[in-house]
Image (cartoon, rainbow, N blue to C red; front, top):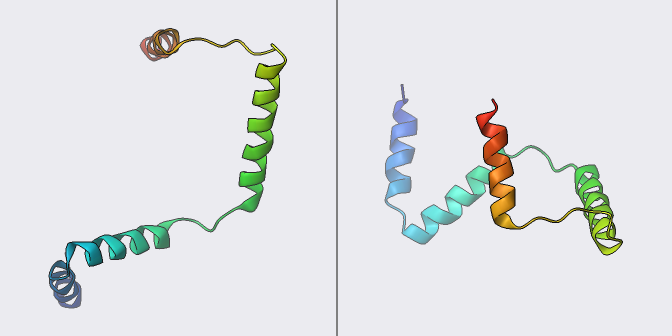
Length: 79
């Protein structure tokens, strides 16, 4: 159940321009995100580099999109 201050704020916000509401929505969503973990970004960079290296050295199996889709559907159907 929404409180009176919440409803008043909502009414004011809906009176903003589309651009202002979009900016506010963006800021609100960012405020909900967990603090940034730089270690995760570094780990992804290492993983991407490793995968590119495997492709460059012929150690990775590459498949086309349709084959990938078939494999994913098969895994989902196996559930």
